[in-house]
Image (cartoon, rainbow, N blue to C red; front, side, top):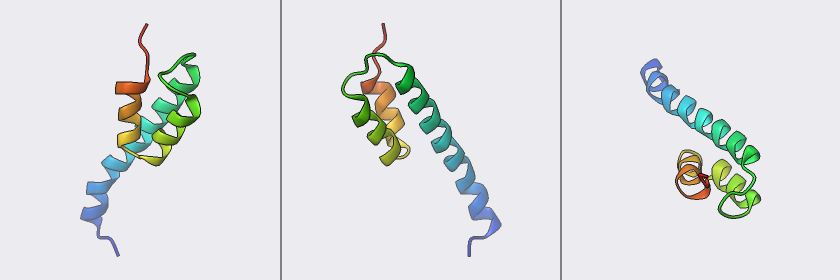
Length: 64
């Protein structure tokens, strides 16, 4: 089983991953015209865990 120290080390990473994923999905829904299809970015955000939301904010989001 996992000991307490391991859980305390992994928990912040999981919280960061979940927060980034939620923020990226909400931004994608509100964004009328991202770079590429929305379905593709939704799949990238969800399937690539920590890297997916970062890729969306760097590449997929258009700033007007």
